[in-house]
Image (spheres, rainbow, N blue to C red):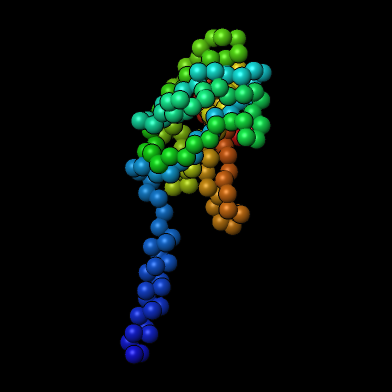
Length: 159
């Protein structure tokens, strides 16, 4: 009986360790995607190709209203691999089409904490914001870092 009682702490520790396992840094992982608009007018015909994942999905609204307020953007969660790049297409309020190839993999600061991407349309250019899980002792949630812009394709600092 004593031997069985001594097994319980070991089983609890093993269960706790298994529960604390993190998502692998390579391969498919849960990520969130947001399409937001900080421009002067709505953007249309939006399509993002994030590796093999394409959104908005076929049949979904491909318009992102301006300016984006709570509930007016587009959000999607998917379990996908982190691609080298994402291709983004949109038509701005002036009717002109725009395309951007966004480096993803090389700009991620911490793959273990990476949670997803916000694609922010600003009229004729696109800003990209990476989301990261907060590390302890911060409260649970996400931190956002404005990372890249098609207006000046380079690494940005957080505003």
